[in-house]
Structure formats: structure tokens, C-alpha cells
Length: 128
Image 1 (tube, one colour):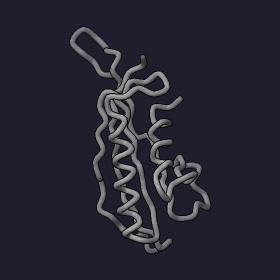
Image 2: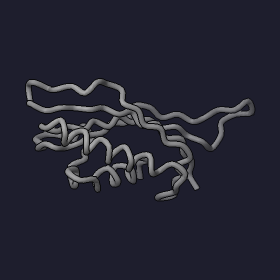
Image 3: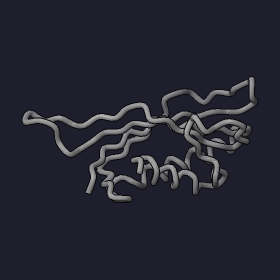
């Protein structure tokens, strides 16, 4: 199980994204609105005496919609779903710290007629 699986499921439960959150490689022919994610970093924390049991994983979450107001609503709901994981455990993983930040301006993809907002999600976690 991926660290992101429970978060993906929570984002997928938000209005407009049910069944429409994909890994970037599985995105072909998706109809808007939709979201896709990709893992961008994974590392184990190190202390002076060696590696700890705390890991950090980072993901990009791209939200896409043909309407800007719908994108804003989806983004707010997705953001709340992600933040809600801080301090919880799911699937044998303790989500100690969850940080989400917007990393690009909202853009309109002219070629496909969609607005896009991109978040970076950084998760400090450990197996329990």
C-alpha cells in the first residue's frame, strides 16, 4: 500500500472527483473535472546516530476543471481532506505531519480548455 492511497481515497470522495483521481500514468482520456497525482520525493529522516523510523514522502496533486469556480470548490475540499490526515493512522501508517501548499498559479490550459491548480503534499509518516 502506498502512503498516498488513503489520501487519494479521501480526495476522491470530494464532490466532483468521485472515481476521477488518477496516477499521472493512468490519465489517458479522463473527462473533466479530474485530479491526478505523482510521487516526487521519498526519504528517510536521519539523526546523529543514524536513520530513524520517520519517513518523508512528497506528492504533487493536480486538480483540473473546465470551470474556475468549480476548481476553487474542489481545491478547497481536497485541501481539507488532505489536512485531515495529520495525526491520524490508516493502513498501518501514522501520518504525523501533513503539509499542503499550492506550488503554481492557477493556469488555464488553452489546448484542452481546462483550469489547473497544483498542490505539493509533504507527509511525515512512519509504520505502526
